[in-house]
Length: 280
Ligand code: SAM
Image (cartoon, rainbow, N blue to C red; front, side, top):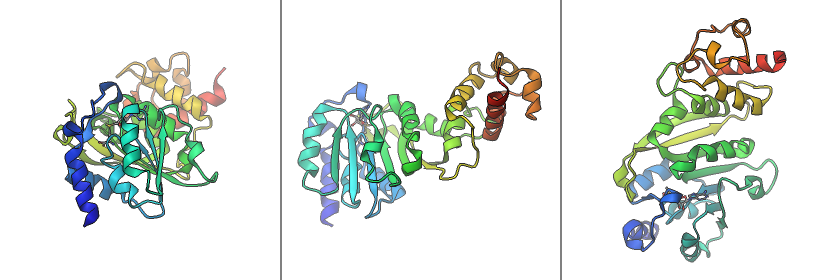
């Protein structure tokens, strides 16, 4: 009960009344609706022995309920102006570990107590850096149990899209290569201060501990998939010019006239592994 009261008071003070000047360059749209915050926390299901990482706490909409449950919470925040209030609110709690830094450049291995420790990652991400940040975090996938992110709704749809659909593209292939992806629920702009111009959604990403598909060279796979989607709605024959010829594409059992947006993730892996073995 005491916790609910504190949580409710925090929500009232967040956003407009807090005195904080929201910074557009840091994608500062703060959650202002306790029902939505509770729904997100229920989806995350923080546990007492979790080591969690939160990217972009802002005014602590998610931090506040999570930090009171988990054993260890690393908080990564870039904005100088938010640091003092985070310290005032949470410094006395044993779980609180604040890192005043850029989440995009941070070495997350620094947070691990042992090389095989498992951590969980959460964040209402600044939309302008969400894709590069997710790609950066995937470098640490072996140590990540799950990630729950609030993203632009369209980005969540692209991450979870199936081949053949309008949304299926590079982001779908790369995220589904590394993770099981789940589009959990949408969040409307009215639940943020200031309200963003776009709809948002919550995605759950579960990095595979044993990947079902293996690209022999993952750095090459990233470049290869990018190449496959260079020209939208063009055939593989066109997009892979200079990489694989028609005969080589068909040797993988894939039509050279197919468009990348219709291929399964397994097809990209097959083509890339073939390229690696047969490239001049
Ligand atoms: N978690 C809060 C909420 O849900 O109300 C705030 C979310 S707000 C969309 C994004 C937060 O990420 C802001 O606090 C912003 O300052 C922070 N941020 C933006 N860019 C960042 C970066 N590169 N590294 C770390 N934090 C960043």
